[in-house]
Image (cartoon, rainbow, N blue to C red):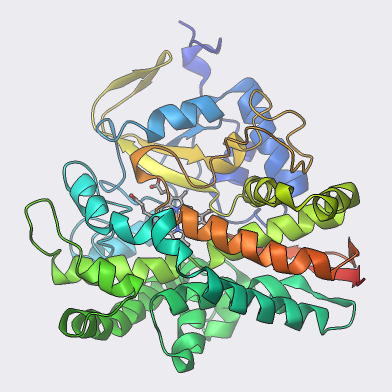
Length: 439
Ligand code: HEM
């Protein structure tokens, strides 16, 4: 028996070295020379394959753009919340299950692990806060924040770390302003977002005061950060229920389900805290992808400087090139024949968003940074009914930052080696030394 893509169904085990590269957190600081080649091997040789790594649940690894879309759009067959929606070690999952005494996703009650029938109504209850029209009213605020970040960057005098001086602080400030969070609380929330996604990165673990990187440390750090978010946002929920104001937090807390009722208090809280978590490191990673792309491809910088109507293309290409969220997990709700591969009910499925974004059947010369790609159907925001709620916020805030930055620089180049964060879920560049000249 062979699959639709010509692989013998008895030999669908992903080679162990490739499975280890893709599934563990260890190699994500080496995207160009380790991760991308592994993704290319999978797309070319085993677009659907079973990965086995000691200490992890076995998973089906899906690497082609079309297959990823097929899975993400079928919410009935592929659930997000029956198992963890990110791939962590079995030890990490066990830690979370024991802590809440239930499903591994019990600590998180936002949209991400929600499946039909709950998902649609809860998404609709908040949707008005995320439309392009709703976000346009924040454009002036975004521009003020972008000007500050760009001023800070230019003020370094021509050479600096673009993450620390340009891309890192801006997205959190954007989301905090939209939620009307007092400025004195920014440092706390900033630290928590780092710890939420940083449990696999040695530097972040060290800063948190924990001993060493281990599955237990990663799970514990994550749980502590998420718990602190919940405590912080409890107060905000109560406040916005009692004193509604014109911010996103009020729109979410006061959102009505199709039956006219408010969401449960736990869900109100988790929907709010998910914005701070979802809207910080992801946007930082996309902006960093854009800065890296422009620094590596000076002709693209010259092109967009001469024609600012290409900035939306630069935004999309930065999202593709930076792919902030490397994977998402689903699990099969029934036995499925997927292009000749038999998924059993309960099997876990890892969709590689980064690999879909590098699929040569969809993107010509995928490793090059090309702001003129039309269309640019990248999968950075996912696909289907779980597609990122914050995508318009992201695109608008990125566009504004580039609009403010581009007229202020003439050239931009890498100034030494850059470093990426470890971790297989949301990861970004952590230091990006650049040199630039100004007009
Ligand atoms: C570059 C920036 C961002 C990236 C790459 C990104 C990525 C994603 C992805 C891949 C998903 C789909 C998850 C799935 O299929 O299960 C998602 C969902 C979501 N994102 Fe984003 N995100 C970004 C920014 C934001 C921002 C700024 C916000 C809010 C302020 C946000 C809020 C959400 C929410 C609420 C969901 C859940 C939607 C649902 O499950 O129905 N995201 N995001």
